[in-house]
Image 1 (cartoon, one colour):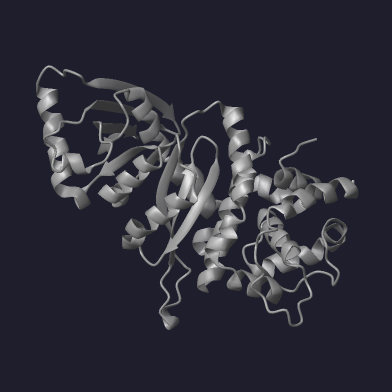
Image 2: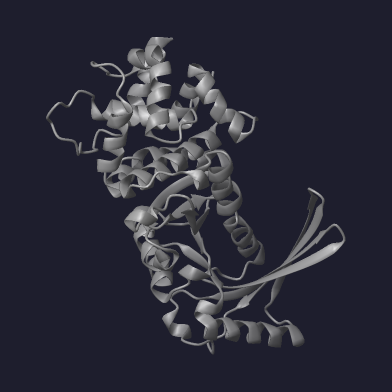
Length: 384
């Protein structure tokens, strides 16, 4: 069994072979690849910081010594902390690229989804600030493949307004070809729309006050069409019941008129749309209305899938990071440390999502801490 586990982890270790060791060679006692793999395993098993990783590793010493190159035993918490502080987040994330690509290929084959929804959105780790040293809370922008349950990339930015500069950097890290990129209103920018088209992907971009003139023009045009004969307008309605509520969503999509403000400067713009959600809970009705511009051709069901799929990053990714990984409570404060740990959380979440176990994510993560065999199944993608 140990030989099988060793072979399995050898495959994992290979994903990090291109990672450059940022540590000084003086008193270097623990192999870089082994330290990185233990950090990932520890996060899968429930660790929320370097101290917890080291404590888990000590308790799992017998197992880890069998499957990893650890000539000087288990690293201390300071080793994990110093390494995660020294690693540049972009370089650390890049070493996961091949692994993510293999997971994405497997997920594509398993789901049959040919044009995946890649949702882009930001999240703040609220307690990661350090006012004494002038460090604001970590705000990062991520790409979440909704149908696959995969976090494909992350870029940290100083504050929410910097999402506009972080999103282009993030899209360069991810293979977006053939996908539908969905972005909330903050990222609805001409340069970002052009970048998506150049990457041979489609876009569904939300509209709000930051594009006030365009937003109002879309509202006015759709209102005009609704008062007329609804020529070239497609409609799709869905209803859902559960958790004490009933929700009806109505999607309307129509060709984008060339009279929209700066129409020619929005690369690939083909359609505009509106999504209306009516939710009835405890006898009270709430209504939400959202407007969009898109490079998608007229196909309202495909648009509806994209608009609905965008919220997967909130419901399946951000919510899970806060509830399962307790990320919002993290007090990691050094810039690289907290960014690298945020990425470890996202990648661990992706691995847990790929495992076919029907238990909750919380139970799957606990099982990684309890069972070496289950941990190996999750990290290698193999099941008995």
